[in-house]
Image (cartoon, rainbow, N blue to C red):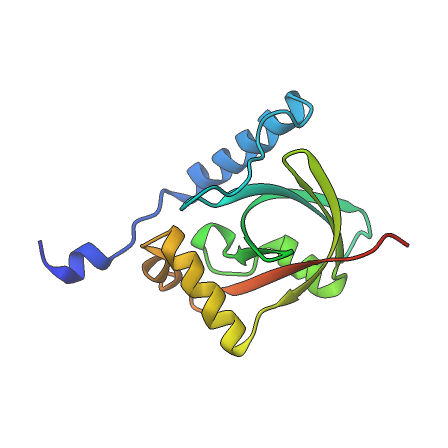
Length: 156
């Protein structure tokens, strides 16, 4: 096998990715949040529930995304299942950066922002340690994948 073939990322069909998201959210809902979220551990990312304000509706919109910790911040990738286009949750955060996250046993309020420059490079490199195919997956998209920093904020 050539290096070029080994570097090419393969993702499941879009319908399968959407079914997996739907199932994951369903497990979270059916179990009352007891299953579906986990903390990052060693070389594994965690899963959190992010609740944004819909940019068009003004209503709460919740998704489950992968994250890693960076000191007190939580960091996710706006990857949309590696499909083109930005995920709705990231577009919502750009319009309304204040959000809520539920971690395994720990709710918190956050403010979102994109990582840029050296910070983005550093965080991308950390994500690459968690997923060795990260660059190959990112190459499937026509635009750079945003690295989203969720900073803690105080309740008002």
